[in-house]
Length: 499
Ligand code: ADP
View 1 (cartoon, rainbow, N blue to C red):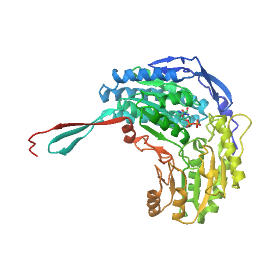
View 2: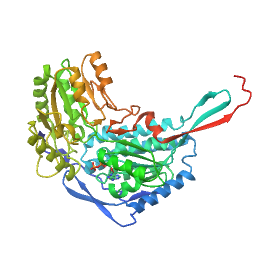
View 3: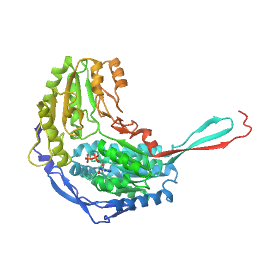
View 4: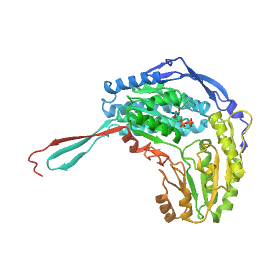
């Protein structure tokens, strides 16, 4: 990979970190235990600050606040249009603070500053507006039950929601979870990932300025097995919405079952295929495939980590792909020329490198990359393996890093079979000029999203979630709103109905 000299990055003025405590009942408070944990800048491996570490007892306090806000507070009771007004104001405050939040994302998670500033954070503010727009349009139906019954449904907020989110898209995940739940009239406790608590605390601060009442939104940073498990096993949380790994998803579901049988929605891992057919524009397809695996350093659950290319164009595709990967710029994520920053932390960095070693040992061909970059920070070269077999670990496991498995196929049937040959079913992509091919493949793939001649095309109204072991339930779209609503049927008898 090309390496940036970082001149433009070093002149960047990073703002101080303002919020490091738990946000409970509208206040920033210390953890009851007094414990703190360190948060590390993945660019430098240096500790930036300490964050109050929420534990079970802090989750209890936060849930109590959310319960009171739900049972007695104004939020679920106010007209939807009023909730919308406050949510819109919050979205405006996010836009006004975009530079400061983007810097937090970069030092916390190694994400590209300019991408966060220009795309991710404005898009997340637009998510808030999308659901604000739905807040006064939530209603049930009148049912034509039978002659003798007048029946209708009420859509009620589900109650106190627990959100557990990962570290790869702290902003997107925060607002994708919180916005529909707020629109529905729920109150909530959110645990950001321990790797990336900073933006969540900033959003909490802005939510208060916008006028979200105390107790409606509580943000408790902490670790998974303590604070996270306290949410999933809590007897007074009515619903858990989780995004993260398949292993942890299983734990969450078990904890929910073992406590109060709260419904859960799980957005889990993936090993998504991008299928490139012979009729594709090879250059454009190679570019798309590279972006599919390298966007956000491969730390994205819908990464196109398996690239399946039809044999007629395979050789040319492979050549172009490798050329492009070698020109991809890795370096300080504040530098506008840089396309890929450091992996989020040491654990992920080492895990990815060990997968790469595994790939080599299993006999895959390392076409490019394979090593870390520099001697400071968690940077990894864009890495491409070819000559992979379907049962290899690098083809089956979610690596969550810049590592692609490149494969060759003959027929459309082979491609479909191979694309579906994992335990996951989150996303997929097809590159073809043939409408027939696109239609056939999109109906044959068992995944929650199919991108045709594009990848990572998201939208507030486009539901997002998994088939198979990629989980269930959808974020985004009106689908997500319904995760936070209960349906109540109200039935009265009618005597002497005329029709
Ligand atoms: P990892 O950090 O290994 O990639 P995940 O991506 O699954 O793990 O983590 C996603 C979120 O789940 C994080 O907020 C994490 O703290 C939380 N978490 C981890 N373990 C548990 C658990 N046992 N119960 C509840 N939440 C957990």
